[in-house]
Each structure stands twice: as C-alpha cells, then as structure tokens.
Amino acid sequence: MKDGIVAICVDMQERVLQLTQRYLIELRRYYYVTPTSYLILIKTFTSLLGSKRNTNYTDTQKYERGLRQMAKAGSQAEEIKEQLTALIPKLKIQAEEAVVTQREVEAKKVEVDKEVVEVNKEASLAGK
Image 1 (cartoon, one colour):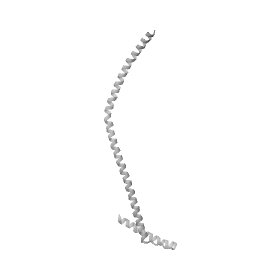
Image 2: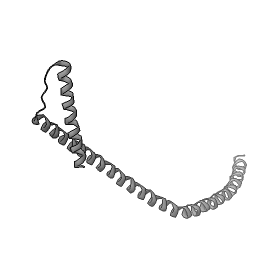
Image 3: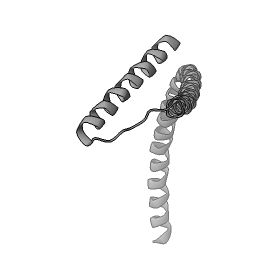
Image 4: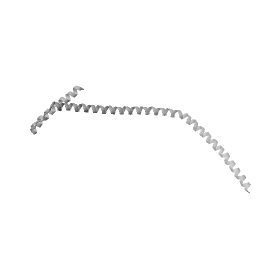
C-alpha cells in the first residue's frame, strides 16, 4: 500500500512540475514548488485518510449493529412461531368444545322456547 501512495505522490509532483512549466510558458510567470507545499500535500492526504477511516469504521459499526438486531429479531420470530405452533392443537380443542357448547345451547333454547310458549298460554288463560 505504501508503494502505491509513494507512486501517487511522485506522479502528482511530476504533474505539478509540468503544470509550472506550462504556467511559465503561457503566462510568463514563475510558480515555485517547495518542499513545504509537498509536505502540506502529504499532511492533507494523511488527514483525509484518517477521516475516511473513521467514517468507514463508524459505518461498519452501524451495519454490524443492524445485523445483530436483525438476527435477534429473527430468533424472536422463530420463538413466536414455535409458540404459535404449540397453541394450534389447544385452539382446535377449544374450537371443538365451542361447537359442542353451541349445540347444547341451541338444544336448551328449543326447550326454553317451548316453555315460553306454554308460559304465554298459561298467562293468557290466567288473564281471561
């Protein structure tokens, strides 16, 4: 990696020297490239590299946190699925019991309706 950075810095230095020659030819003015400007370039590159590393680290942490939360949610969903699967037989039994209870209520309602008719008859006879 250092070799690549060195190659880039050398390439930039050579391009700047070429541009200073062009600047001299076109505008007849001198532009000097000093070691200080080269050191400022390296310092700027170093600070930019550090900033990008911090940004990448922060983004990586966010993604890892998100992945952990997604994994946690997935495991919770599996637990809920297992609980629901365990409840299915109980729900079937309760549904069957509800059907039986409904039939009993309907049978008793028929008896109650008969008794209501008889009571109404007796009430009308008693009223006469």
